[in-house]
Image 1 (cartoon, helix red, strand yellow):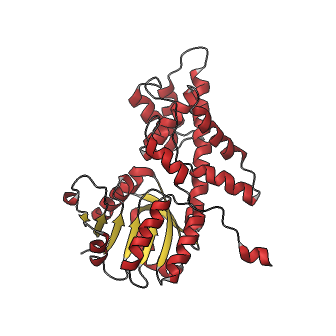
Image 2 (cartoon, rainbow, N blue to C red):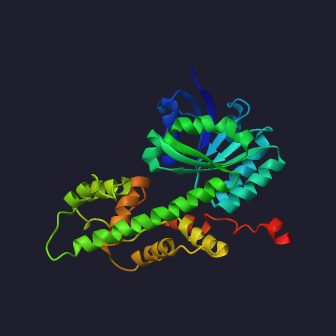
Image 3 (cartoon, rainbow, N blue to C red):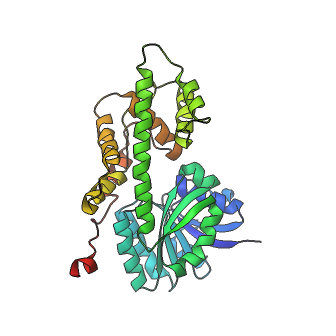
Length: 323
C-alpha cells in the first residue's frame, strides 16, 4: 500500500536519489526535468513531459519538491509553476537557496494561497539515496503534511523543523560554514603529515583516527576512502570549486556583527587553492568529491552558480527598524 504521492522537479544527483529512496519506502514519485537526457522510468520514478502533466498527476494538497540549482532558475520555475497549483498546495525547495530569497519566495506564494517550505538537505548523494538530514523552515500547517515524508527519508533523528520560512536554509547555510571550517582543518592536517621528515602511511593514520579518536567523523572516513582510491594526492588537482554559499554566510555574519574567523578564513583558503598547488587543497577536494560528488578541478557550471546562486541581498527586518 502506497504511503503517499509527491512530485520532484529536478532529477539530477540529489532529486533522483531522493526519489529512488522514496520509492523503496513505498511512496509514489512523479518527476519532471526538462534537461533529462535518459529514460529513468524503469527506476520507478514516473517522469512527465511538462509541469502541467506533473501537477495533474498529484493528489491535493499537492507536495512538490524542487532540487535545482539555486538562483534565478528557482524564481523562473516558481513563476511557471504557481498558476498551475491550487490553494494549500506545498512547494518544498530542497536546494541550497539563500535564506533571504526563501523568505521572499514564501511571501509571494503565501499571497497566492500556497505554502512554501525551505528545506536544507545534508548528507550528499549517499544521504539522499539512503537517509538524509533535513533542516526545514515553514508554517506549521504545511509542515504537518511534509514532515512525515521528511522523517521517512531521513536517518533516525535526522529531521528538524527549524522554525518559520527562511530558517531552514539559514540553518543549512550555517551548517555549510561549519563544514568548510572542518574541511580546512583536516586538509591542513594532511599537509602537515605529508611534510614530516620521513614518509608516513597516511592511509593507516586516517584509518586509526576514525576508530576511537576525538576527530573520528564521516569526513575523516571520506578522506581515507578517496585517498586510498586515488593512491595519494598526485592525481588530484588542488583547485577547489564551490557554489559560493559560504561567501553569503560571511557576508551575513558582517550584517549580524557575529565574528566567524575560522569559517571566514576557510573561504579565503578556498580562493588560495586556485592560485597554486597545495596538499591541503587536494585533501579538501577529495572529501568534497566524496560527500557531494563535487568535481575535481575547475567547472564552468559551478562557477556560474557561485556568481548567480543568490538572487537577493541580506533581508532587512523593517519591523525592528521602525521600533
